[in-house]
Length: 303
Ligand code: CP
Ligand code: NVA
Image (tube, rainbow, N blue to C red; front, side, top):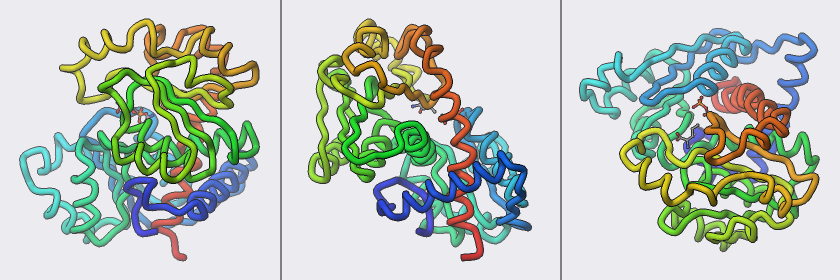
């Protein structure tokens, strides 16, 4: 594993290794055991979009591993004035030990990896959000203790989070159902891969998708960069594509609820359900830290 660009590139074994290390690092942190596994290393963090969780968890994570993280807003980099990513990649590779990028196009993250010579971590593109889903899988395993045969249902926009979640959950042997409006389905290539490699369904019917789910998951109807489409999307999703009491009832009483956050209450999830499942949702947010520390150690550590 040289980069983390999308979960398609990882084997089930590699994902499990990351999750196991993440559990170990979480245990060590909770017990005050230092783990300076990246002492003296530097991570650049390029942000072309806003972030709370990704920015803070990478920066704190690098500090806890004994390294140093640089926040690089694209507005302040020459990238924001048109310097090509191919050149940025070759320059940053001479200063840093790794780079995380949050941007629009997946190709830009891939180019950064292709032209540079250091590990690249995708901190969210329009296509994928692999760091999020590693934390999600860690949380599911923590709460449900297993993956195989468990049912995960994603309700909402077939976006970056949905694409990565489908791939990650199928790789771990979960059954995946997605409920979304026509026209807002996940990436066609991801759905085809999922159907060929596991149990996958995509329907417009929310209750059908939620039936018997162990894990219910949702994300915002409009992602960063989709501001112009937001009104049309609201029309397509409103009143239907939401985790609420009816959906919880279809899933069953011990279903857990995840949300990558930020959440829009009364849109994709009701306030009541979000608060009832806050313990799970904020554990998920915490697990971003532990999962990403494991990713950085795997990519930038000595072995
Ligand atoms: N879930 C997530 O990636 O959050 P941020 O946008 O705050 O980083
Ligand atoms: N799908 C959302 C996720 C934010 C963490 C977005 O891309 O804005």
